[in-house]
Image (cartoon, rainbow, N blue to C red; front, top):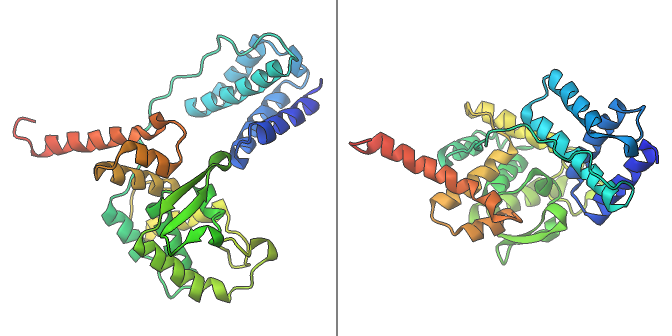
Length: 295
C-alpha cells in the first residue's frame, strides 16, 4: 500500500464513515499529506516510532507552535488508528509518543458594551451594511460557528416560532432561539437587500450572500469582523469565534444552566462547555480583588 492509496482510503474513512466536518477533514488531510511528503521513501505501513519522532523534531526546528505540534501528532495518530482498524498494521507507531504540553488558553470575550459598539460602527448606508449588522448579531445572539453561519438557510429560520434550526458539526441539528433584535435585523436584510440581488442557483436558500449572489466565504466573515473591530476601536484580537465565546460567557454570568448552554453551543461533551464557568470564576475573582477590603 503506497501513500497515495492510503491517503485516499483515509479520506473516505474520515469524511464518510466518521462523517467529520469539511474543515476537520481538510485539517487532518493537510497534516497527513505533509507527513507523507516528509517520508516519501518510507511506505506508510513501514513507518516506525523513530520516523514520527524525526518528523516531530523537524517541525519543532521550524518553530511550529506546541499547539500546532499537538494537532499534527493527533492527525498522525488518527491515521495509524485507521490502519489498525483496517488490519493493515498490528502495532501503533505513535505509541509512547506524547504531545507537547500546552497551557489552557482562555478565550477572548467581548462585553455587551463592546458588542453594541461594533454594531453601532456599521455604516448602514453602505451596500453591505444591513447584511453585516445581521451577521454580527447572528454570531452573538445565536453563538454560531463560522461554518454554521455561512451555511445557514432561510428555510431554517422560523420567525413565527422565534427559533432557528442549526446544522452543526457531524450534521447534528440543534434549535436556538431568535432574539427580537436579530429577527428585526434579519427581516430588514432579507426584505430590503437580499431580495434585490441576482442570486446564483446554488445559493437560492442560503441566507448570507456576497455581492455576486453566492454563499459568503469563511474568509470574508473573518475580514468583516476584523475590520469592524478596528472601526469600533476594539483593541482585542477578535475573530468570529469571539462572539460565540461572548454568547456563552454572558449566558453563564447571567445564571443559565450549563446543560442549556451546552445544548445551545452544540457541544457533545459538557467539559468543553465548562471553560465558561472558569471564565465566570475569573470575573468573580477580579470583582473581589477590585472591591473587597481584604483582597
